Length: 256
Image (tube, rainbow, N blue to C red; front, side, top):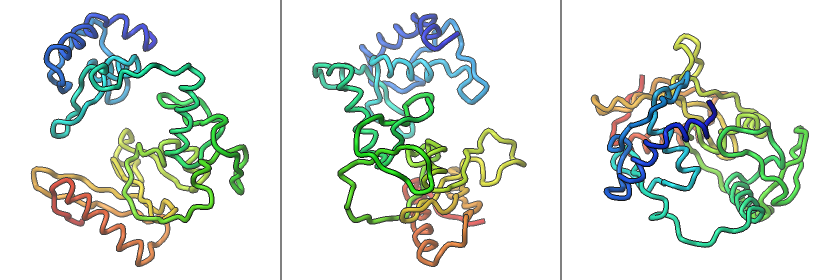
């Protein structure tokens, strides 16, 4: 069963969600009814996560949207209450605007790329053509970034950050070896269950393996994997980012 057919088969649950949001929204996932007649089947963590998956498809349909958060949970409401009631642009213009915004966020992207699930990775003809030394094919760059000074910084990235989300682009531009290993057996992991890529300046330099032990009130730093030995400046900057992450989580840093 394809995605559209699955949504159609669970039309009753979809209507239940819309009616409850209309009367009581915004609401969290746990406050929404699961009246799906056909469960969502997956070999991953989404198996039987019927309401979260249905909400994902309802976002694509323009019916619901995230309005904020309640603690760690997202708050959902009717899209009509969140998005402006502006006229829709023609399809070609909407596609161009989307590609421009994607290129603006990425800085550099493939003109054409392999089809990806979810958001595409290419930007077609927007921006300016560019060549990446040592990499085949055509790239596009945001012209507003050309000839602009670059001020790098250190950052701990989400494994789903757009800088690394397209793994092929990540390897081609940064020569960075990384995989999200949460689905691998523990014995086969190189960097950890949910290791965070480490950015320093204009390079991806390593991975942070850390665990938030909330009951104990600590962020346990299990390992900092250095692709090459960190410079003193990089190590200081990365340590500062780890401290900032712990502070944001309301935890204390504990190193293994």
